[in-house]
Amino acid sequence: MLSESENISKTDRLLLKQYNDSGSSHCIGQLYERYIHLVYGVCMKYLESREQSQDAVVEIFEKLLVQIPEEEITNFKTWLYVVTKNHCLTKIRQKKVQFLDGLEELISDSFMELEALFHPKYRDSLEDSAVDRLKICLENLNASQKECIILFYYQEKCYREIAEIMSSDVKTVKSILRNGKRNLKICLTQNDG
Image 1 (tube, rainbow, N blue to C red):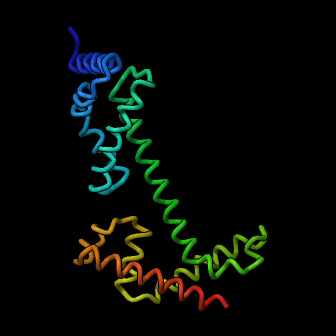
Image 2 (tube, one colour; image 1 turned 90 degrees about the vertical axis):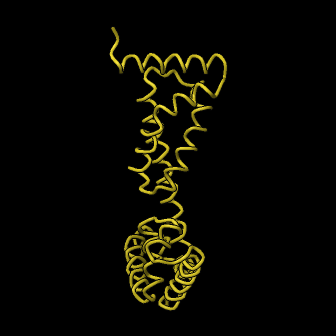
Image 3 (cartoon, rainbow, N blue to C red; image 1 turned 180 degrees about the horizontal axis):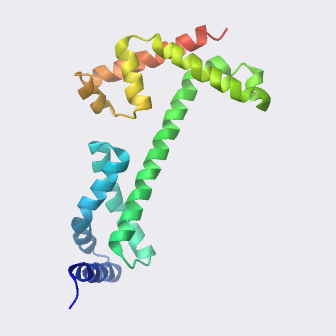
């Protein structure tokens, strides 16, 4: 007699075979419904945002429709966990790249004219200097702009989450963030030389 987990695993393999044979997304829907709590839980662990996790759950389901026929899956639950984890890590990396691009945009005007920036000998000290200057300029912002910048760029909160934290609306948060970024850029440019 098969244990419950062996039974589930056997059912998973049967549904995968049916999907590969027929292409019916109903089979994947049944599998996904069985493990959606696992997917959502992993997404919450890595993304730490209900909204982003819900979006990721949908994206992962769409991914499965394409990936499953290309893979040889022996244990669907384990495979799905790995796919979900990798999807979340990719999202986190993309967000970090966007964050760094945003910071680079803020400080690029004030540092691009410095030839020493391109010389490896001076690069580390100049980057440290840029971070120090950014911190000083951040401290000079008004309280709401500083809070918005920290929540958005450093804590990676979305507009809606920031609006809830600040007891405001999304439109106001976007405006405060835009003004804060502008003021940071002005401060960095003024302190450049």
